[in-house]
Amino acid sequence: MKVVICGAGQVGYGIAERLASERNDVSVIDTSRTLVQAIRDNLDARGFVGHGAQPDVLAEAGAEQADMIIAVTLHDEVNMVACQVAHSLFNVPTKIARIRSQSYLRPHWQDLFSTENLPIDVIISPEIEVGEMVLRRIALPGAMDAVRFADDNIAMVAIECAEDCPVVNTPLDQLTDLFPDLNATVVGIWRGDRLFIPGSNDHMVPGDVAYVVAEKTHVRRALGLFGHEEPEAGRIVIVGGGNIGHYVARQIEKRNFGARIRVVEDNHDRAVTIADGLKRTIVLHGSGLDQAILKEADIGTSDLLVALTNDDKVNILSSVMAKRLGCKGNLALLNNADYQGFTRMLGIDAFINPRSVTISRVLQHVRRGRIRAVHSIQNGIAEVIEAEALETSPLVGEALRDLDLPENLRIGAILRNGTYVKPTGQTKIRAKDRVVIFAAAAAVRHVEQMFRVSLEFF
Image 1: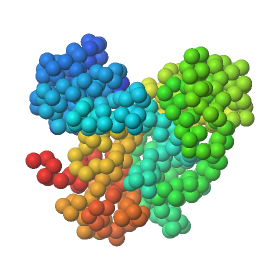
Image 2: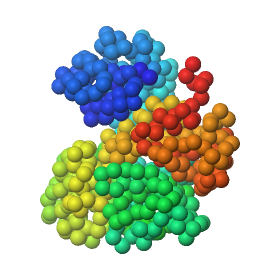
Image 3: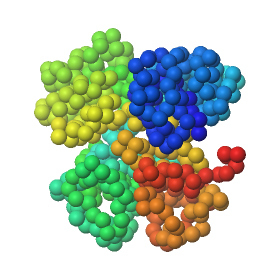
Image 4: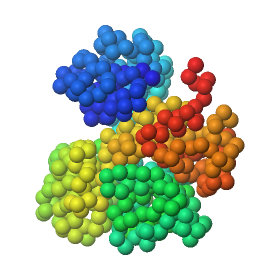
C-alpha cells in the first residue's frame, strides 16, 4: 500500500514507523526540516519538506499513485485542505484527517465532511478518542487498559497480577475447569519486558500484566478473579481543564456516573470558561503541582486523580503528589513513551498514551480485509483486532483445533448474531461472525489474510 502522511510529529512519526515496518510505501510531508530528517534517518520511508496541503508538494510525495492520505498536522485547516486537494487533483481513494476543534464536529454541521463538500472518509478526534478511553478506565477500576469491541458486547482489559492475586501460578487450563461459566479468555501476558501468547499449560506470576478478552457483562467478575474488586470512584479530581479534561467532566455529568468531580485548571480564563459550561462540577483555578490547591480539591479523601494536562511532567508529578496526600488511585496522560517504563515504580496506577490511541484508530482503516477495530498494545508489540468472517475466510467451517494458526495469535472471543461465543478447540467460526483476535506484530499480516476479500484489492 502507498500512503502519504502529512505531519511528522509524534502521531505522524508513529504511523509512519508502523506502516514502514510492515513494508508499505510511505511518504511523509512536514514543514520542519528537523522532523523530516528524523524520518529519513530512522525509518524506511521518504521525507519531504513542504506544506502538506500544497499540490506540488503532494505530487512530489507521490499522491498520484497513493492509496491513502493521512493528514495529522497540528492544524485542522491544513488537514482538511490536504484531503480536499488529494481528492480533487489526485483522486486518492481513502482520506483520513485529524480534526481537533470540536466546532467542526458538532452534529449541526454533520454534512460538512460529505463527498460533495469536504471529502474526508475518516475523521479522528484525539480529544474524543482519548476522553472515551479515560471514561472506560474510570468505569472499570482495577483495569490498566480497557477497550470495547463488537458493538460494546466484548471488552479487552489489561489486569496486573499482584503478589496476592488469587490466580497466579495456576495453569490456564485449570482456571477454565475451575470457572467454566466465566466468559473470559487470557490471550496475552506481559512479563518483564516481553509479551507472549500463553498456552493452556502456562500460568501467570506476580508482576505479570494479563490481557483478557471477555463478554462485557463478565468483565467485573474477571477483574474480581484477579483480585481487583476496587469500587467505582465516588470522588474524582481532574488536573487539566483542556479539551480532554473538559470532555471527561462533561460526559461524567451527562452519563450520571454518580461521582463528585473537581477540576483544577492553571489558566484563569479557561477555568472560567469550563466552569460556565459545567453544572455539577467544581472548577478550581490553580496548578496541579500546588499542594494547597490539591488540598482545596479534597485530594486526601478522593478516590481518583486523573491528570490530563498537555505536560507529561505535570501529569506525573501531580499523580505522585496526590498519592502522597492520601488519594487512593491515579491515572495519567503520557505522550512521551520514554516515561511509560517507570510509571509503576513511581506509584502511577495506570496511564494513557494519546499517540497510541490515535494510531490504533488509523490502523483500523489501514488494515486490509474486513477489519472493524484495532487496538495497539505496548507501543505496537501486539494488536487486538476485531474482524468479520466471510464465506471465503479460511477460518470458516473448521474446528479451531484443526486450523493451522500461528502460535503468536489467539482468538479471544466471537460474537454471533449478537450472542457471545467463548472459543474452544471444537468451536467453528461461521460467516458473518465478529472475531476478536490478540495478535503479536509478526502475526498481523496473517490476520489480514484470514479476513481478506480478494475483490477489495483488484
